[in-house]
Length: 340
Image 1 (tube, rainbow, N blue to C red):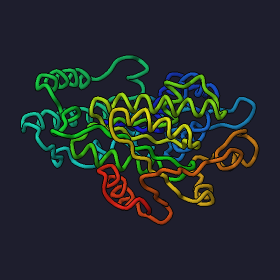
Image 2 (image 1 turned 60 degrees about the vertical axis):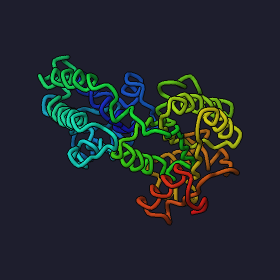
Image 3 (image 1 turned 90 degrees about the vertical axis):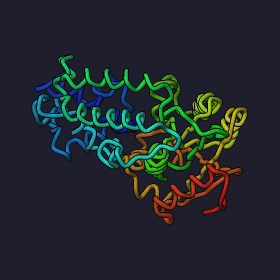
């Protein structure tokens, strides 16, 4: 299963608010306690407010608090607030999934695991997490995991003969569509039985590059680290989807070199025009950058170097999502036109 960065941050923010309930917490306090980038947290809290799970108060002691008792808010309810909530739990039915070359009984175990995860996400509340007392369904997951492992190779690790690892890097301005395409692409690949590792630039910064800033040297180092991790996954035959602004050509090519030592590297330039990305401003970052609140921001105060060697270019303002995903998959397979 894949949980996007925003879903992860939303759950962590809600848990922090539940721990403090009924008191209010400031945005800065939540960000510090949970390690959530402030540039995401404000928008996420806004989403939770819109869903009537969180309220805010103004004034000197202003802050955020849960709108409901923690015992009435399930983890799944929080997750559904953010786009990309586990499509495999609340989207495609597990019984519809097919996995070439996988034993029928193994697929049955996988379906059971999916059903168990669904139940847990719906049953576990914020209060359960804070108190450390979880429903009996959690114990069921341990049993499913044991049965799963007893079959050996799973749909998440098994690969067809002759398949080699591949990493695809989605690069472009903030708002170009990287996360949207990543979510849809990964859902399709996993539904087909592929093992997919997602390296989101912001998540990597949180867990692997938390000491880095946004200077050119730090940005390049972050991309090189992503390239090294992707190369290790590809070396073992895995599939990697990287979603990162990656604004500089040299760092992108260094990441390519690290991956191509072991397998294939596909660079997808999301060429959505800057004015379109800024008009979308889904995270409110462009407005903050224009107001001088963000000192270094790609497209406003920092450059984006158009990739010289892209296997595919997609303008998401012109290409529908389904078609964009199909083009990326074709590029990953080594077929199709490189211009879109």
